[in-house]
Image (cartoon, rainbow, N blue to C red; front, side, top):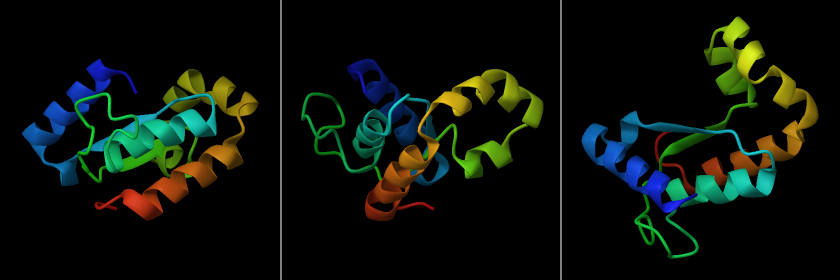
Length: 108
């Protein structure tokens, strides 16, 4: 996760409270989605950004996960994510995101 997005997430969390922030990722690979999710839950593992050592514990999902998919309008989801869902390793992504949520999320 780049430094600008870390700053945005941190500011939104300070403004609205961690229990009120949900981060949705759209990375094409499970590993990169997991790294970004770890950054907003347990802190930046590279110790390079504003979230270095900051454990926000935010709730995180990937756009292809059923929980997110079921929460949004079907037509919008299909238009914006449908094609991506067909080419990604959805099970790998779900597993990675579940692991991050189980280990680091404080607000589920």
